[in-house]
Image (cartoon, rainbow, N blue to C red; front, side, top):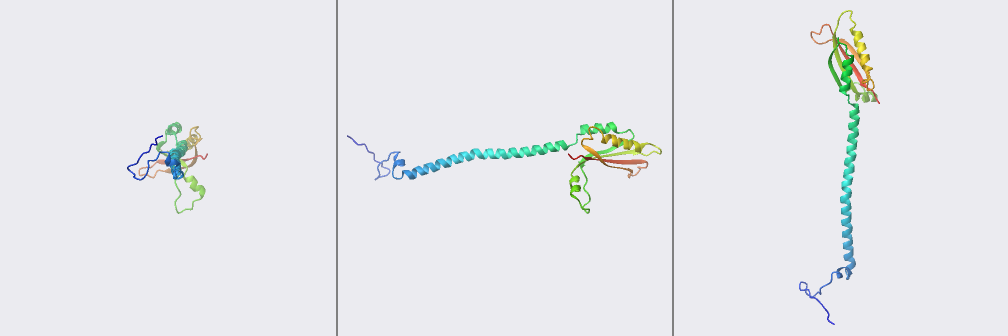
Length: 193
C-alpha cells in the first residue's frame, strides 16, 4: 500500500489540506458561520434591492394619483369658455356692448377689515365678472333690457348649474367723454357643491 502526500512549498512546515478540511477541520464551525453570514447578507441585499424600487414606484404612483385627482378637480372647476361665451352672446341685447369678461378668484376684502372664516372661504371661490356698457337715452327701456339679460344669462342651462348671480351694479361711465354712457358690472359666483 502506497500513501500519497503532497508538500506545500509556499507554506513550508504545513502539509497540503483538502478543500473539505476548511469546513470540516478544527476551524470548520467558524468558517461555516462566516459563509452563512455572508450568504444571509447577500440575500438581504438582493431583497432590499428588489423592495426599494417597488417602494419608490409606489411613492411615485401615489404622488401621481394625488396630482391627477387635483388636476381632475381643477378641470371640473374650470369654466368651459366654449359653453359660456355662446350663452353670453345668445342673451346679450344689441344695445349692450361687452367691455370685459373675466373668470378668477373673488376679490379679497381690504386687510383693515376683520375676516370671518366664511368670508375667507368665499374669497377662494371662482367669480365670473361681465362688464358691459350702453348709451343712456331718455325714456328708453335699457334698464329693462339689462335686467332681462342678467336674468336670462343666469338661468341659461349652461350657466345655471355652475354659477349664480351674486352682484350687479349700474353706474354712469367714469371715463372722459363718457357722457350718456352707462357701465354695468355683473358678477356671478361659483355654486358650492
